[in-house]
Every structure is written in structure tokens, then in C-alpha cells.
Amino acid sequence: MAAHLMQAWRYAFFRNAVFAGVLTALLCSLLSVFVVQRDLAFAGVGIAHCTFGGLALGVALGLDPIITGTVFAVAVALGLARVTVERSRLKEDAAIGIAFAASMAFGVLVISISPEVYYGELFGYLFGNILTVSSQDLVMLALLGAGVIGFLAYYFKHLMLMCVNEDVASVLGVPTRMLHHLLLCAIALTVVVTIQLIGIVLASGLLVIPAATGKQITDHYRGIILVAVFSSVLATLGGLGLSFLFGWPSGATVVLIASVLFAVVYLIDRIKGRIRDPGVSWLG
Amino acid sequence: MTEKDRRWPAEGQRALAKAEDVAVAFNGTPVLEGINLSLLSGELVGLVGPNGAGKTTLLRVLAALIQPTEGRVSWQEADRSLRQDSGGIAPRRTAPAVGYLPQDCTKFQFPVSAWDLVMMGRTRHIGAGRWPASHDAEKVRQALKSVALPEDTWGRNINKLSGGQRRMAMLAMLLASESHLLLLDEPAAALDLSGHDRLYGVLNDLREDGIGIVAVSHDLAAIAAYADRLVALNRRVWASGEPEEVLASEKILKCYGVEAHHQVPGSPGG
Image 1 (cartoon, rainbow over the protein chains, first blue to last red):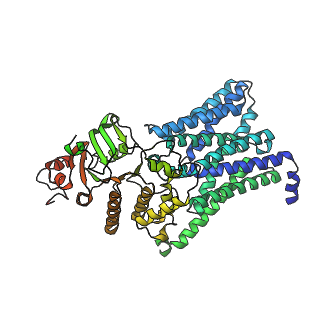
Image 2 (cartoon, rainbow over the protein chains, first blue to last red):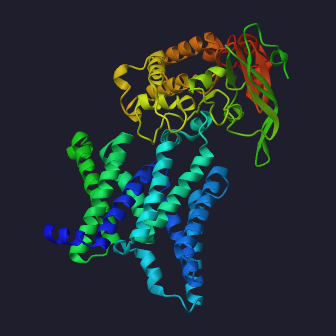
């Protein structure tokens, strides 16, 4: 098995996939800490699915679908940020639900009325294929990763304070509105890149599962970040290896391994909790 | 505007914030009307009134979290010491040096230690993209000691502390922020008797250091014992002045919407 993987390492497409996977895992796991703490999990799902409308439009018009998808994702992220900060009658989850459905419906309509559309390309975006990442994609991913990680590092304390209490953060001089908009844009850009690797359907998984796993193990933010990064890199490398060895779809394998890691730590935490606090049920 | 609010600051006192003819309405429903209030340094103002009187809304207006529908609020600008603390670079947004303690501040989704929480109070001084310096750590240590939070709790997850300890940690966070004006929404809630005494002891020390404080309270007797001034609010200011004077006034009964034969707790004979 190891010899098989060593052999695979000689191929540029496999090395690109590994580098892209590790970068995406790093990016998604760092963002996931704020996605989970700020209850943005559904926003991540919504932005990922909204991107489908933009991708379909790009394919139908013969434009670069990644550019039209990015425009859609960022527009949806900014719209959601506005709904949140304005505290309008429309709740954030309702707004996401509407944008999600409308964008998917728009995508399906565009495909159905465009006879020239090659469905295979769009299907690829739904489930992704990390093994098709080119060197050019890798450079774009590295640039985006540097931008998003730079943003998170620069405003780390501010974002943490916003997670503790947004009003207190605002009074202490944190530009909460701007940072909320930027955080959603960072999620949107990360989603677009992740879509190429693991697809629209699974992209939100890497934005939620790593931090959720970390929260089960530790009750300190530093521990959560470490566990999130470690578990998502492990899931990505493990998923890529299994995908290469057994011919399984890479995106699905990565997300399944991340989910299994979460399930294992969740069960361990539950069992430990029962041992610590057996409650009346054990006593009958 | 009442006579008390028109007064010129006493010697050594300075106006930290001023609300002029402030009105707030939510979806056309008036919540505050014609509020005129000056908040001075070294003064503890007790903000009292029945439920739904607009006390939290007024605090949020004074904290610049809500824009008034009418009127204006002005703050003393962040002073030179703040700029010096931030390494000679003024914060991008010249925020009023105000600290705000919300009512629902004892449940934390984000898993931080008490130390980290109090360090967050230094955000205005540290700025973005920089790490805390040794003098920031010293301020955090002083703040935690001021609220008498035991040293063995400093590194613990804030959610593992008692409700009272969490509230004191939040207060320590405001102390570390070195704000000139503290806006506290029911700071004594969830505190036991000793916590209550410690809280007002800390507020008293802050007042002596020239910090202006506004504290919302439903415990009229307690707030009257410590405050320099009581402001009775129910959509508008019904009474403002020395605590004894306000509590003895018929206006406090009207503010609470109770009959004259009732006694408001904390008022003489109440």
C-alpha cells in the first residue's frame, strides 16, 4: 500500500492534489472555528449551493464558470451579511433558504434552456475532483489561502471578541460590521476554491466538521484550532490516499473520514460524560 | 431638562457624555422621548425604572450601539493617554472611551479563559495585528485582582466559573479596557451578598479614580445606597437627582405607574 502511494507521488497530478488538499484543509479548518462559533454553518451551506447558479450561468454563456461562481458567492455573502447586521424582519436562516433555493432553481433553468451546456462539467462542480487540480489552480489556491489566513491572523483577537459578545466588541472599537462582511466574503471565496476540490454538495462539510470535532475534545479555543487543523489535514490526506488506492470519489472520501473522526470523538465524549456523571438512569 | 441635568460639572469633574433631546422609536413605537442627560466623571448614576422603561435602550444609545431617532449624543473624545497606550498610533475609529456590560453577559459560546476574556478588554489599546505587550498583561492582572477573582480561576474556561464569577470577569474586562465611562446593565444580577458588596466596592474605587458609571438596577435600596444620582426612567426621565430626593418624590411612583399609597422599595419607609 505504501509502495503504491510512493508510486503515486511521482505523478504531478497526485502531488498537486495533496498540496491543494492540505491547503484547503488548513484554510477550511481555520475558518471553521469562526463558522461554528458564530453560527454560520448554514450560511456556509447556503453560499456553497448559491454558487451553482453562477457556475451554470458561466458554463451557459461560455465564460469562466469560476469567475461567475465567485461573483455569485460573494454577492450572496454580502447580501447575507447585510441581512444580519440590519436585524431586519427577515431572519438570516430564512434569507439563506430563499437564496439557496432561488440560485439552484436559476442554475437548473439556465441549464435546461441552454442546449450547448455540457452537463458533465457542471456535475463535476457538484461533487468536485481534487485529482484534476492544475498547477495554475494551485497558485490561485495559495494566493487565496494567504489572503484569508492573513485576514484571520490580523483580525484574530477582534474576531474572537466578536464571538464572545458582538456588542461589547463594537463598544471597544472593533469594526464589527466590516469584519462580519469580510468573514462572510472569506467563507465565499474559500467555498469557491473548495468546490473545485470536493464539490458544492460537500464543501460546507469542511467548513463545519473540523471545529465541531475540536469542540468535542477541548474547551479552549487554542485546542479547538489545533484539533480542527489536525483532523481536517488527516481527513484530507487519508481521503486522498484511499481515493487513489480504491478508486473512490476523493471529495466524498475526505468528508466521510472527517465525519467518522467527529463521530468517534463525539461518542468518546458521551461515554466519558456518562462515566463522570452516570445520572439516575444507571441506578434505575 | 431637569435642573440637575443642567448643572455645570462640579470642580474637578468633566462631562464624559451628553444626551440632548434623545428620542428612540422601534418600528414607529416610541421607546425613549426627550432624554437630556449629562454623565460626569467620578459619578455613579443609578438608572432605575420599571420593566420595559427603555433603560437598556438608553444604555445602548449611550454606548453608540443604537442611533437615536431624534436628538444627539456626544462623547468626550478618546484622550491622549489612550493614544499613547496604543504605541503612538491612534485607533482607526476614534471610539469614545466607553465600556459596556450587557445584561445577558454570563453565557459564553466561545471557549476562552477568564484571563483571555479580560485581555480582550485591551483590544482598543492593542489594535489589530499586534500581540499584547507586558504592560497589557500587567493591566489584566490588576483588573482580575481588583474584582477579587481567585488566581486559580484565571486560566479556567469562563463557562466553568459561577455566574457571579463570570460577571466579575466581565467587569474586570471593562477595567482592563481603561474606559472613562462604564455603562452597566444590571451588574448586580446573579451576585450573592458578598459579590454584591465586592461589585459596589469596585465601582466605588472606580468612581474615586474619576471614572463615570451608569448602572441599571431593579434593587432601588442598593443602588440608592451607592449612587450619587438616581435617574428614574420610563420612556422619559421622570426624576433625576440625589437618591433620597428622588425616592421621596411622588414622581418615582408615577414613573413606576403605582398608586400613591404604595411604597416603592428603597424609598423612605418602603
